Length: 318
Image (cartoon, rainbow, N blue to C red; front, side, top):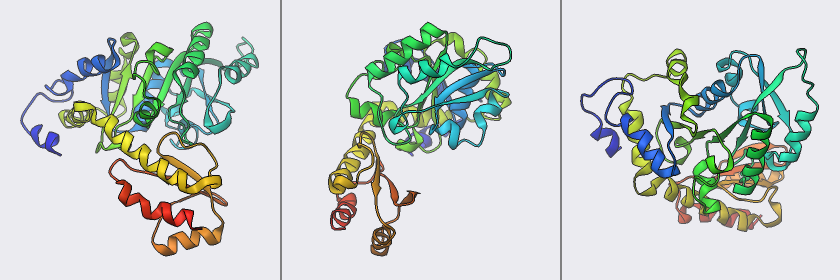
């Protein structure tokens, strides 16, 4: 809020302001390589603009069957790419392996009658809170280079993944072969700004036009950039993610064998019967019914351990 207030001064419109002009350098320092960075209002738009840079309308993007771009973006990737197809790959915890992607590619003939793959998109952390390690990303990156595919990472919870891994952001992105990253901030304390990071700046050439055409070129872009810069200051993005991950770890410890997936970021999936769910809600807790007999809990960057402990105690007492 302080950063937004400080940006409330007259400056050049769109992305020519002093705040927006800092993004390339700040993200280049964070990732230890030259990047091109754009602010974007939503994760859906960031993902879709990234894929538009990697895949032509007649091509295909491989992704997990449970990927956000497949199940939760209302066809936006197909819309922004002007018709590119999503090809679905299986894998535990919503993660894809290099072997699974290679198998999916082997089923596609080099034939004008079949849609040809142009890109791979993975989510880190995944929809089930699973984190790709640098080695896992590198194996996929090597396959993408071998097959001539662009490589996109949906990082709506990228901060949580890095906090879990304890590695450099570079190690799990461009050093492992990622071409474009959608760097999420809204789920981690930002108000209304995400970042689209191109590790191959030449891929970003048409993105300013696509962003404008999509209605995402804000006339007062400095407010978008100011949020992002404030999150980068003193690694606030990482501090917030560590706090959210710690809360999820507490819930995981309380859940015990109720856990459906290992807890690696800030999402917890657990088995609860309808009566148990009603009991928790009766105490005053609320959560998402993921599937019959399954609940999804997501901890926030601004929930303290003291805030979360009553829910952990209630789960342990079921």
